[in-house]
Image (cartoon, helix red, strand yellow):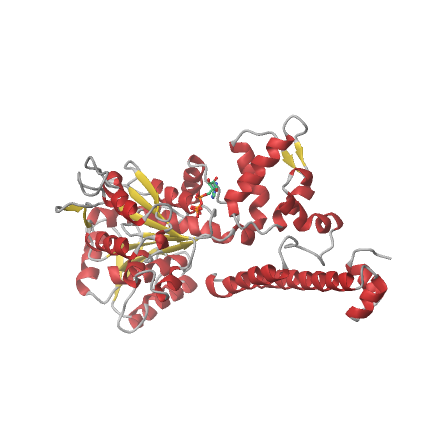
Length: 479
Ligand SMILES: Nc1ncnc2c1ncn2[C@@H]1O[C@H](COP(=O)(O)OP(=O)(O)OP(=O)(O)O)[C@@H](O)[C@H]1O
């Protein structure tokens, strides 16, 4: 039986938990403050800890960090009220195994969670995540951030809280929403998706909430809305930032009370659906510009999952190609040269664009060859780095297809994202970005000088203040 630690200043909570788990044969230690925690953590080795995120003398996250440093094998369940769910989600990112909401609704849930965590020796649910991803034809890959996103999504799927997914177009927001639905207890109920940006304001309201007969011209029959159709399932609101302010008020009401009224109706109805919203833009800016309600954002982004753009996980491109070809049972191989082009391209349309490029290459290669070379790729992809990957010259890597202004814009966006959006940054990636900037600037200024001098290398070198030898080196004419 296990040694279990409870850290909570609410006596009723710790006494309740202690009785519950004592009856199951576990040995319990209770601390009501950070100070008591400090002294107990030195005395015993614990297998499991229940931590309150709000203590009078210390922040729960600080306790979690100490516990993980001193007793890394100890599993942790964080206890939270609705107002501190965000802290609980952060705790999971810092290594907590799960969280439960106070007040406790169901004793059985706590008993099951305790046994589940104690039995699962390494606390990992990798196998389950991979199995579900495979069932849903969903690629995760080896990128650390993507793995973290799916781990968190899997963990949060069973909690009854809304989730906001942020990611550029085509990064897989809908696929992630489906993954969450299928990992949740709602999996046997419908998953209903709607793109808030694709339909007009009036139609969106009637699609979401339904309408009564005669509610507007053309409403010849009563119609159910998506909230009703989703039932106890999941409603995926894509491009939530495009919903009008009037619709946003109604969405806020549903999130707060579950209540809504059909267009043209009078009766209040009740929705039990879980909302997963998605956006390709940061909604904070929309709030600043008065286009999005801050109270709705506050309700929606209790949990925000950010899917990184494909260009920041380009190491996974060959794996994705393999995954796709296998799924479609296509017997083709991409050459190293083709893969280099694909890795260096910036993928504004992300995985959706990659899928289209693969489909196109396969269609062109069919009946000719099973080897897909760079020639089967669209020009915009082929031109990016074809010359450089062939010559292996690190001076001229990616982004050849863009103008210098566009390049600078993309580059600064990327590096700012690495600095401000990503939780941790790999300095090697920063250096790689600096190399890319150096190469692009060198190339652009050389092109300008060659244009000014109508291709005269000697004069261009003079204009640039470098030797002819160096210019030839940059031009990859190693003479
Ligand atoms: N993780 C993934 N595994 C497999 N396929 C993926 C994945 N992510 C994206 N795709 C592919 O990319 C396409 C776009 O994915 P999805 O619709 O989920 O992206 P999105 O971010 O919701 O796009 P949008 O912003 O345009 O709504 C899908 O049809 C699918 O083919």
